[in-house]
Length: 378
Image (cartoon, rainbow, N blue to C red; front, side, top):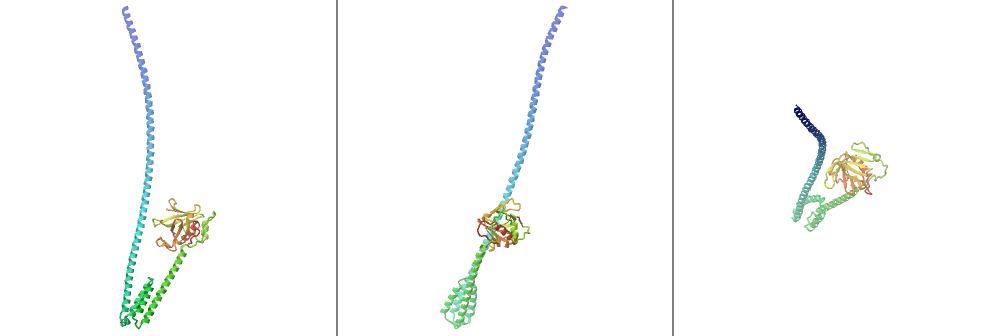
């Protein structure tokens, strides 16, 4: 019995010892599980942080990409607009060049036709003059009876025709004198006094016409010199309190036109302007006379955004009407409203909408003409 109890006790002791071993083993496993749980939790937290950072990075990249695309589209649009503007400018320049070449070709053809026409007229007149000389020679080489019957009528017609030619050729007086000398040495018919009187009459008439032509040319040259630089009504005004509108109204102009706008310091309106050295085409430009800026500027239109040129007061020499019509024959309507602003660099040919507006513009611009001592008059 004791052996059984002892054996049982041993078994219980062994079981208790094994139980303790198992409890220690399980306790160590629980700690490892907790550590693994903590590691997993920390890893999950790091993962979530990295995922959030990735989402922020993706959002920022998408925003920057959209901004870059928008900037690229704007740049592309601007480049396209500039390319179109340059293409339009090139087309306009090509068109102006074509017009200029076409006008030059037409002028060349016209001059060539006139040259051929004048050459033909010259040949015809030369043939007629030779025929006339031959007739004169034949007349005086015939016998007296033939001269008596035929000379007066043919000679009279020939002399009349020669008198018509004398208005365009200055040497016909000498020709008639030579014919008179020939007649004196030829056989003298009984009607020689009559022929001599007719010759002398024609000589006197040619001389009178030649004198009249010379007098007319002298008067024309004097008139041309008088029209080259007419004097002006006004001198340039540099006063700071000068009122431009009151000045123009005081000159007798009525400012009731919608084509011009005047203030105390400025004048604005559309004028037609001829191109510069290269292109001689006429363009409609918006002109601004500004006494504060001391300049006469012209723009593409009345918005005054695209400046096409500027004339400073110091460079303006003269302002006057194109009285000699050097450009008026090719200027737009009304041609009588063509005037010239002469500067140190070059003359500017302008056309106003009406003659009255031309006079107003001349009186306005001349108040700022500070480039010379003499000024032109409208």
